[in-house]
Figure 1 (cartoon, rainbow, N blue to C red):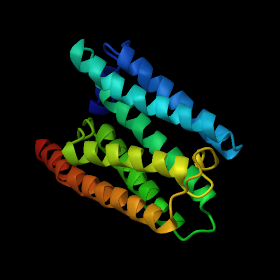
Figure 2: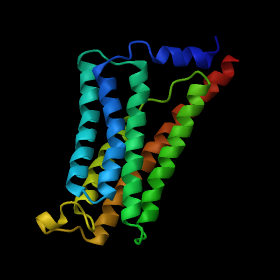
Figure 3: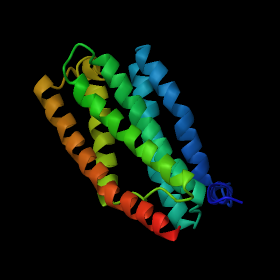
Length: 205
């Protein structure tokens, strides 16, 4: 059996866990959020994406506390994170299409695509994607807080009419830029681990 086939088979050992179920639920909620938001059911959409992000918090806590960490979970969880982030960014790009900030939002999609391609390359070579380091966790947290805040209070946001408050455009730019800087730091932090794994794999041959 090749390394890649053996690695893929190993992913499904002990995969029936609550954390993995929560990751699957999070993935299934992504298109629901996107459709509802684009149909202008803003409050329900915001509630769904907040719930989805909370499952991300709880699946990690449950996995560690009840020793339900699995090989599949280590891949499924970041995939759910990336799909969630990409969906939020796509929604924001559509919403801010007439605003130059859409180009800053596109940076997040490029970063996630690079990460997905890098992970796929590692898996194809029988390796495991690099685990999230502190920068990655910080970037994800900042991204979620900033983007949900922008969805809620940015121009035409879900809660603008209810609260009679809208973020000034310059504040939106600053918040998104801070998240972009954290995301760039996260991407750069993954590169050494990726290169190290590729080098070690090459030396094994």
